[in-house]
Length: 273
Image (cartoon, rainbow, N blue to C red; front, side, top):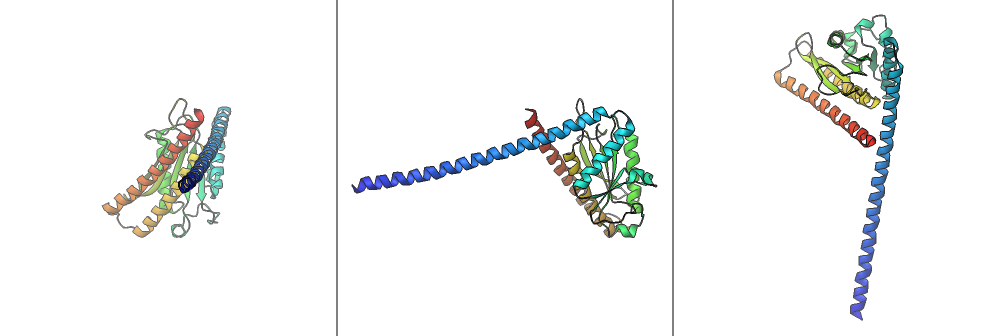
């Protein structure tokens, strides 16, 4: 009888453990299903945005309409990130800027073209953004904006630049995004420059809001880091070891961008399948 009781007790304990394990497995399966549903919903939202962007690009026929719409889209994304945005494409000295000047929310200086280098040393970082919404982007246009960025950073107007080609790739870029440091007047790599463009394909895949969010956020971060370096250097030289450290940081940010964009691509692949 004692043996039978022990056997029954052992069976009951085993049944209890099995039930607990089954409950845990069911909970994990439910969590995985919920995550999969959330991912599917997110992919659906991204696809809907992309379809809307493609339709809008097809409907816009004139270069002026395409340009104004592209700038408005970029301004809207920057504002959603919490930045204060100035439309410098219509400023009186617009040739010194890009189309959009992206400022921190607590940067309340409405005078974009202050040109005050001392003020630039204490204010939050500013990012000049040039928006291109065309079928083909000439190398001379990219070089022209790079020159603007060098001059603008030197004058204390802003702290770095980002050129966004919404509908076509940028020549020389192996991927749709890149971060770099241009040389300043002293030959030091201390001028942050970012590039974001449509992915290569037939037709090219336009830049999405998600891509732009990542590019703007990482470029502003780089501007802040390098601005601190410029203040520390003053007119001094940048040692080779410091140059390598700065370039390594830029490479890390570019790798982060690449990982994020690869994740977006995986989401799109799930949707397409």
